[in-house]
Image 1 (tube, helix red, strand yellow):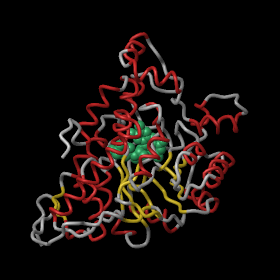
Image 2 (image 1 turned 180 degrees about the vertical axis):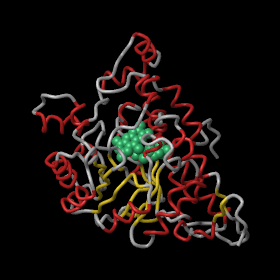
Image 3 (image 1 turned 45 degrees about the horizontal axis):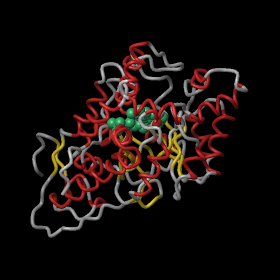
Length: 387
Ligand code: FNR
């Protein structure tokens, strides 16, 4: 039994909030606009009820499944998050190593603070690479080639950032390129001497592949702002088809909320699957909660392609609900950044183990044998009558 003060993800959230300087906290936690989508991602899960079947003798439920072609020990992987090195200097390397030790994977962000190769070298297994689809094809194919050479098994292309979302909190806090440091902000950072010392010592606060891409594209002449501009604004389905053709491994499209788009991802692009996601509520505020978008999408493409979901997953009940509605697995975003902020690699591992034991217990209490058995018959929408 663990009597520690950190019993659930919310406990880690509160601890991380104390550890991180305001600027970094704002970057991690912020949503777009009024944060309605960010908050609804979590709230929408609570509108579903789990069914409980007793005396089924299911004392050792099976949690393993296959995500992006890899056997994982639980249906949970780590979502790509940019600038993870700001939460803790060990950033993406720590996240990848913790995921591997737990029998799952990290999707490494294009805006990671360690290079594609550094993360590959720090781990034994193949991880997955998230690509922001740079409109500049040489840059995109150069990043894809590097990920493929370094042994990444799956490419996840994020399509919900044609422009950055309206992150008012980030602007107010001075986060951007360049970051604006005022005396008050410096004082706030100085109040976290350990974070500050590590940040100065390790200097892992820069989006490495971006900076490299920028160098490639502009001969080192321009700021990262330009690399950002060279991103997704004018991209269409043809560009995704082109990326699919460039990449030999498994191919996924992240940031889909609409059943027609899901169908295009599969039929037009030939993706192996999609990630139903609204970027953790950081892009289009008032977009649907991920879990609310899932049923129509799995009705449309379920069985033809893999479906994953992220956004607001904080409890095993959320994972179960997503699986019941057609997802094969879920990704965590902020939760593992909280773990990272609190205790680096160890903290990320703790977040995964917390969800694993929660999931184990939840399945026993439901009377369910395996995560792979979960389907619509195991949940009810609030107000829905038992059939
Ligand atoms: C993200 N997300 C993200 N997505 C992506 O494809 N590339 C990226 O670089 C980032 N960067 C990023 C930074 C931070 C600080 C956060 C919180 C999120 C979105 C991420 O992959 C995922 O979709 C959401 O975080 C899922 O929601 P939760 O789990 O944070 O509620």
